[in-house]
Amino acid sequence: MTDSHSNLSDLRKILEVTRKLAAPFDLDTMLTEVVNASRDVLNADRGTVFLYDEATNELVVRVGTDLDQIRIPADKGIVGESAQTRELINVPDCYADDRFNRAIDKQTGYKSRCMLTIPLIGYEDSLIGVLQILNKNHGVFDDQDEYVAQALAAQAAVVIHRAKITEAIIASERLDREISVARDVQIGTLPKEMPVIDGYEFGGAFEPTDQTGGDLYDFVPMGEKRLFLLMGDATGHGIGPALSATQVRAMLRVALRLDSGLDDAFVHINDQLCDDLPDDRFVTGFFGVLDGNTNTVDFHSGGQGPIMHYHAAADAFDWHPATTFPLGYMPQTNVAAPLRAEMDPGDVLGLISDGIYEYENESGEQFGQQRVAEIVSNCADLGAQEMVNEILRAVRSFGGLAPQADDITIVLAKRTQN
Image 1 (cartoon, rainbow, N blue to C red):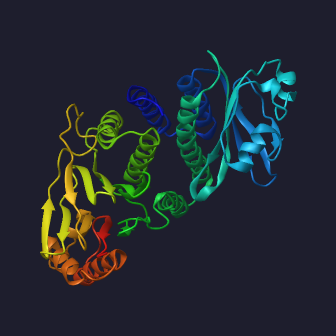
Image 2 (image 1 turned 180 degrees about the vertical axis):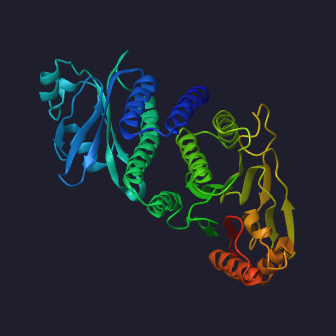
């Protein structure tokens, strides 16, 4: 396991990579950025990205250091094995490994000494390609390099997937096609199913105002009975805020891959957004860790509020305001200690966007906190997802013919009675 100083150093490097890769590059430029960033972070001599061609079942070198296009069967060599097994392969001595294909070295005149080969896995477990890093400048690749390389590969897969989709959008002649693709990307980043933690139930919903929206939520497992809860809202509506929301999710997952704690993840992502976002843009965000062993939720809430805590035994509510400024609003130096919610049997923690609280009916009246409280209290015996569905049904009924004016996101975590 890496020490804290090393992890934070790696986190800063990879967040910088995330920032660079957030730019709207074409695919070839994006691939070059991935290769250069990988070489820099891992202190290596060369790098190559192989893209998977599903039609021919081949891995194709589209961008590589001093390499022209090369096509390799997707089940051959070390690259093929990594693609097939979906596992990282660390080769300390290439010429001592029977799987190593010497043909490329012979063709290019380059001498491969050691290499890391990492599969690039996109949305819904799709194979995007393989990232290969060659010849560490000092020694061979170690466990820490493997750890960092996997975080890099996860981020690279997302941006390459995004760049490939962008190419498809550019080629499309119709605006509705562009929006449809963007919606597919955003919806693809939402949880496919609710997490499973003994003693808890979870429910979630996301309904954008337009075909894409600036809200997000995510569940990230952190070991046995621990779960990271993310919920946020980027200012505005449409494709731009959707990209900001996706960026927050991607940076959080990179941070957690590097064992970053709650405070470090919040501070570093906030500071990165300060550099990236225009002055009039920010992201409200709830960052929380649910621990099923202690039945607590520790959290920071950057501009996101109120955070609802329903106490089942007393049939009462706590409404926690935001604990600090929105993400990207200003750099954080000394973030306050996180708040803690004690989850007793039957308690419900609610992360609900202002698209619910501020939903207006035809008379301009807002739905408000009290209506949410009444639904949760009256539905205390229901499961978490059933509660979510009841809130959605009630707000639609309340709104009548009035249009939805803001994105809607609901995340509920309920401790069961046992």
